[in-house]
Length: 300
Image (cartoon, rainbow, N blue to C red; front, top):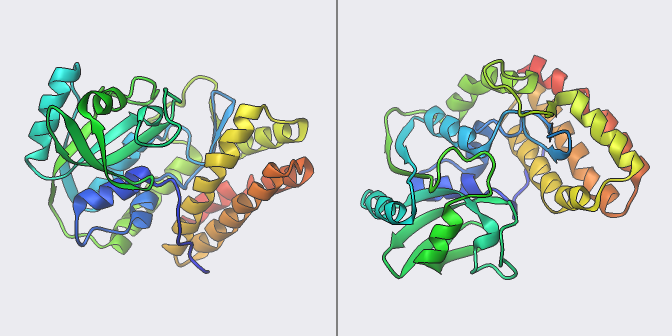
């Protein structure tokens, strides 16, 4: 297959690669190792996500870091004063990975003036009482925010899956040498478990996953999606879903690679149909996608 190279919403994978420094695995490998490509869900039976039900970036990051042989400290804070002190402490060990953050409060990005319930991760480089400097993987190297504005975004108040306020990972060290290929081989059973629904992670109320969720979305596409759901799909979910699957296909070499590439192509072709209101075309594509998740689990 021809791998995809280009822009895309890989904020936590890109941020982790920056924090790990020279010799870090490619963001594509990190993304695959988070488990994000291996499933589909309707969150709350409404919001379509091309990732497994029960999964979130916080869980995925911890999985990828461990699978690659790294460890780090992961902390949160209570209140802005404690958060700033934590940030200063974290940066003593080098760049730090902050998130989830509320992207709508990133005042350096044009048009961002209020919370939009969108999560984001950045690599923090320096901080003092006046400002915070960071690499924003959304296209803004060496970005800065006034410290108060950064803390407001970093709190992540609107991010439903956050487990602590002001979450930060720092003090990264390598405990064991693991090649990307070795990490991916070891993770295959975990990927299959995501596809079939992990028994240890109950989905949020009303959330469904796998083929059932894809068929439900197909039904709703045929009837006409609400504007906000359609916008979410065309501006974010389809883009990131197709890229995750393309990267997963590029890092597998067997039957799983063929299934993943087919999934990537199906998800990728949804973009035109959804943007141009080809409901029948989008529904057909989703019906073709639905059975591939169980086939992929079997191949893994």
